[in-house]
Image 1 (cartoon, rainbow, N blue to C red):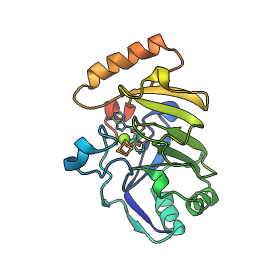
Image 2: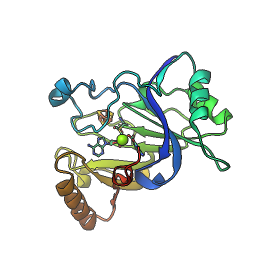
Image 3: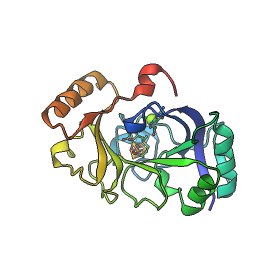
Length: 209
Ligand SMILES: C[S@@+](CC[C@H](N)C(=O)[O-])C[C@H]1O[C@@H](n2cnc3c(N)ncnc32)[C@H](O)[C@@H]1O
Ligand SMILES: Nc1nc2[nH]cc(C(=O)O)c2c(=O)[nH]1
Ligand code: SF4
Ligand SMILES: [Mg+2]
């Protein structure tokens, strides 16, 4: 299998229960819910995306096999001691992440995190799975370590969402021009339904990537 990667970068996880943890982020190109082109946004299934996942950037590229991508990810890890951590995101990582890549990273000693929209079944071997379901999609992956619901999605409100398959449940305010209002509304929703906790995108506040 070959892989198309937008970017690989070393940063702190900004969201959810692993927020603050050093990680190599591997952002795969492409998504099944939006082309990534602004001209298509209004007719996409997922319309609020905050991410550029089109093509390949300078620290990404095309990788011929799992060993080549795993080596590139290892070269991106800057930590000394501790357990190296990689977060696969995108775009939609489960369009490309496979058993060969999971095995290659485990052999290099990595823990593996994944950020997915939940429309594709997750392969075995992921150490930390974050599922972020999107309104109007076929949500198949209903178990994981955390569910992170971007809020508000009027067609997928928190009181209609089952959280029992997950250890942690988060409402993450939808970023964009109305982020302040969305944050206020997400706080109110967490106060009303304490199953949910607030996830702020800390990397955007601290100004890291
Ligand atoms: C860019 S997505 C990539 C992974 C996967 N496609 C997904 O949607 O989960 C990474 C995370 O950012 C969240 N996200 C995307 N756009 C957002 C926005 N405008 N405001 C807040 N979170 C957003 C997603 O819900 C997901 O949890
Ligand atoms: N620092 C940082 N944390 C993140 N958590 C999820 C991200 C993503 O885009 O998937 C992300 C990201 O892009 N940067
Ligand atoms: S599913 Fe994820 S990557 Fe795809 S458009 Fe939505 S937020 Fe962006
Ligand atoms: Mg992001």
